[in-house]
Structures are given as structure tokens and as C-alpha cells.
Length: 403
Image (tube, rainbow, N blue to C red; front, side, top):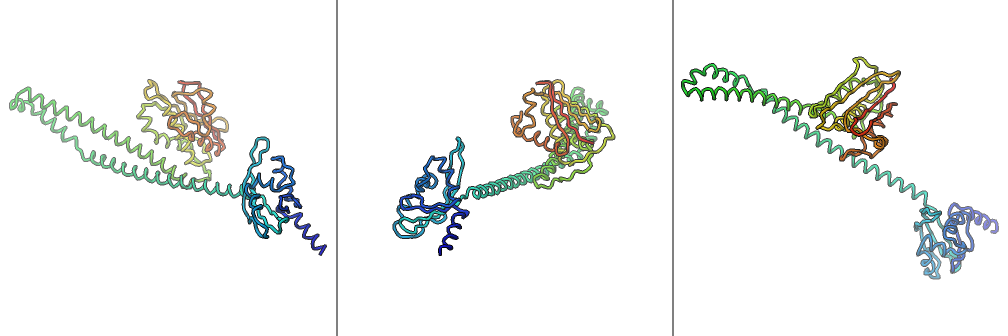
């Protein structure tokens, strides 16, 4: 019996949870090593003598002391696996802790308290919960983005259909008939004048000629507008294709040989309508034969489109001189692409923040464009920099890749 009691005492002494025996007044009769370790920070933080468990409970599990005192004289469970949360203040820092209590009354002066530290477990559970919530939020955003892209795509298809109807209607218009009528009336002007008078005859021929000329101008303008609308539709559809790949998570992570000249040319065609609308003079210096680089064509196109768009938007539409110069060259073992515009420019302080996440100089900007561009370029083992000599002096974007 003595040996069995010694074994039991040793097991309790080294148990992985806190164990304490207290009397009816809360005085600690016995406590194991884990219990002393768990309660030591509480005793230090609240400057307690550590001899009375009721005083400790008042700080970490308010209300438990009252439950113990009101439990009556009969033996039995007072608490069973009840969690309590509390904070410890060390040097002004609030540390959150979580304990679980089980309290059993054996007699009036023998109450056993078992307590576990659930802090790490609670932190892990919270981290998992936050991760699940974050994934749910991301999934929700993806679903919203998919729906938006789908709706935009449908609208663009419908818009394109109407533009095609206008184009077909234009093809059915035959301006030659009006031209022939104008020529016929001019040839018969003498007879016409004899019938309705010289003044009316001359006016009728001139009116027909004016209508004929106006129709030619109007048809040319409509055809030009239809062409511009088709370019815009193509531009939007290409952007939607890129964004659908990102939203669906199907963008390729494998880097394959890509021709930067081809990417630049495709991007130019996508922003052509904006360049023409703003009457910007663009000069492009790209050699016919250039070495290839390894990369993700879709993501690189996103970067170059963003850079071109920024240069276009940086130029005041009312400026007397509007220019963008693009240059692709080889410098040692590097492929260097530069875009120079004569837009608004920026100061040194702004230049230092351009690639920071969330920073933007646009009223409706999100601050994610250039940050994403830098991430993409760096994932291609390249560099990107944007410099300016100051406000009103334009900007120079330089992107480099290893050949």
C-alpha cells in the first residue's frame, strides 16, 4: 500500500496538467510541478503570495471561488472542463491565456482542482479559423470576380454584335447612286433651268452636290468610328482573357521562351484606340531581330500594358506636345525595355513610394498596379524602375531582363 501510494503520488507530482488540493478556505495543501509552473506567471503578474487558490482564481476565473464556497458539504463535481480566458500584464504588454478547469469536492476540507493551459491550442484553433475565413473571403471574391467578368464579357459580345450590324448596314449603302444622280442633274442643268428657272436649277444641283459630299464624309466618319469600336472591343476582350486566367487560377507558372518584341507589338495594338483618341505621337524603336527570354507571356503582357496605360494617362489631353517613346535594346547581357513620356512626372518623395502596395497618385487608383508589376518582373529575375526629373518633366520606365 505504501509503495502504491508512492507511485500514485509520483504520477500526480509529474502529471502533464496542473493538480492542486485545497481546503475549504482555499489554502493550498498540495500542488504538483505543472500546477506551480502554470500559476507562477499569474502570481508574479498580480503580486500574490501564492498560498491561497481562491485569490488566484479571482484573477483568472472570476466566479469560480463563489461556486466552490456554495457547493455545499456533499462530495461531487463542482466544475467539469470549463474554459476561462484572462490577460496577464507584463511590462505594459497584455498576454492572453486560456485555462480549462475541473474541480471535484471530496470533503469539506479536500477539494481537488485540475487545470490545463489551452493557450497554444486556442491559438492554433483561431489561426485555422482565420485561415478558413480568409479562404472563404478569397473564394467569395473570386466568385464575384468571375460573375463580373462573365457579365462584362456578355455585354461586350452584345456590343460587338450591334457594331457588326452597323458595319453590315454600311456595306449595304451605295453612295455611287447619289453620285450618279448628282452628275446626271449637273449634266441636265440647262434643261432643268429652262423648266424651273436658273436660280432654282442652280440651287438644286448645288444642293445635291452638297448632300453627296456630306454623305461621303458621314460614311467615312461612321466607318472610322466602327473600326475604333472594334479595336476597343478587342482590347477589352484581351484584358478579360488575362483576368479570367488569374481568377480561375489557370495562369501558367512555367516560364517558356517568349519574344518581347511580339508582346510589345500586341500591347500597342490594344492601346492604339486610346493613343489615337488623345492624339499622342508614339515612336517605337525595336530591332527586327531580338533574343528571346524565358517568361510567362500573359503576365508580361499585363506589366507592359500597365506601363503603357500609365504613360498615356500621365499626359494631359490638352497639352500642346504629347509624346511617348519606346525603345528595346541589348545592353551587355541584358534586354532593356524603356518607355519615356512627357507627362506629369513626379517628385523624389513620390518616386520612392511608387511600388509600395496601396500607394497611388490616381483619384480612382487602388495602388496595386505597379506593386503587382514589380512582383511579376522580379519573378522573371528582372528589374523595373520609374524615374522622373520632377513635376511636368515626364517619366522614364526601365525594365531589364537577363538574356
